[in-house]
Length: 437
Image (cartoon, rainbow, N blue to C red; front, top):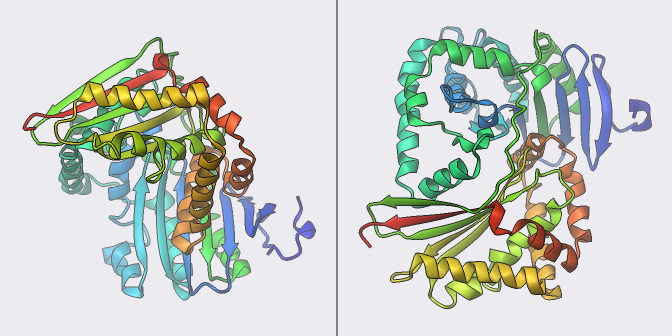
């Protein structure tokens, strides 16, 4: 689509217009292939910028697991044109101007973002462009940040659900890097070399492996021109980004993990392999997860919480670039037994597989998802974060197309995906046992 077909869309030399969907305009930066998403809202009092890099723990391997997360810390330590010697750290430059500044890392992506008064948006654009290729990746900073990251790792080890979840993913995935926790394994956190981190930075942190999203109140034409100027200073990656070509082998039977820790908490988790987020079955799987555990009328809540067998249930349908997991987590009530609760939870799965779901259950699930989808535009950060997760799946347009896909899902399709994916041979069961209970 050419810009002349969308007269309300700004055009700036150096950026090629790609398409416009529901107020979100996509461009490619001619100089280097950077993807740009602009979602202007003249009523918003602030603007937000997020740079999403298509790199996460999915791109790591033994020896440097957690590299993406550790680099996240190091990339706040300064860059060529933004550092203590030239006026202050990123925090000092932007937080003093009322900005929300942070970054997050996950399996398929890393992002760096600022939400701030629109008059300071040009500074944020220049800062993000500078650290894309000119970040200081120093050994002294690695030494100072490593204990901070290790403390994050240790805090996670003290949370029953996180400890169980880590073992669940590690067992469910034998070959694929989803085996590794995003934060990395402790020994890699402690021992990864600065040379390996620099190589990882040089492998992945380039404009043709990134998306710049800007939302909220801003002048679209001036902002696009600033992106062309600042990010256009970088070329494409000199070599192709290292491909992640590992596919998880077919699972051939149920797998089981047991974690025993001091404490009184007891939990079970039921995980099943599901396809990548862009698969046609995914809308039905999202609704299945809600029918299982969203609210007091959900299947697992009525079976387990109402009977005082459990105190909490949550089902997560993880939307990743590669095949992932649908997991139900159940926190046991005092005196409940793991095996009995597991059997009872699986019975609800069997009921859906055998008898399907009711029309009222589907209506409630769709209503819940509509509320969630509406909230994705509730302010600049909510929109940035939502676009970020769709970029990570490999198709940002899911942000626009998913609501229609969900609306079309039928009760029979929910039953169909339950039959297809909630089977023992592609499941991993976890028990967290509090040894003081």
